[in-house]
Length: 173
Image (cartoon, rainbow, N blue to C red; front, side, top):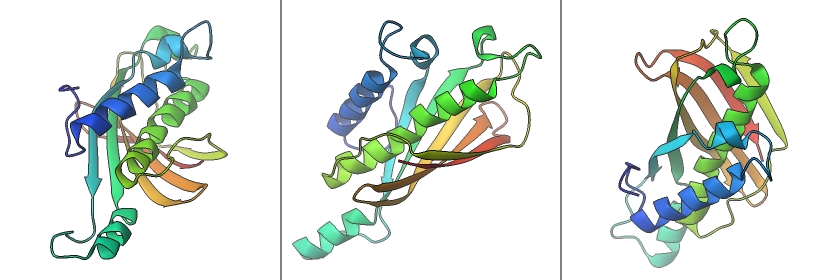
């Protein structure tokens, strides 16, 4: 998994990639798998609000639970992802966001030793600019809140070349 950058330990990057590929599935088992297989997990990071050094074991565990995880996925917009106007179809955008937002929550679960898997219960998507055929996207997802079965992630779709902000989503899972 040397292609995945970030400070998450290698074994956790590998596990996150394995979970991600499981959620994508295959064309025989899952909706959108032909598109999902083209999403690349390129970065997985964990950020702590305070350093763990010098803390007791219980203080360190508490600090780990307040970690924020950030992942970056990338995909190129192809014709089979677009509507008749040559822009990314809203349903396809939701599918991409759903998959990519799960990577940050799974990353959190791997880091904290909790279950980060599940299904989305809602998504609130705000479109800011149309995404056209051929655009190279990066999806930046971060955990907002994770406590038991309540899990929220925020995802931004950005132009890979310019970093221009295109969509934002808050997902609950």
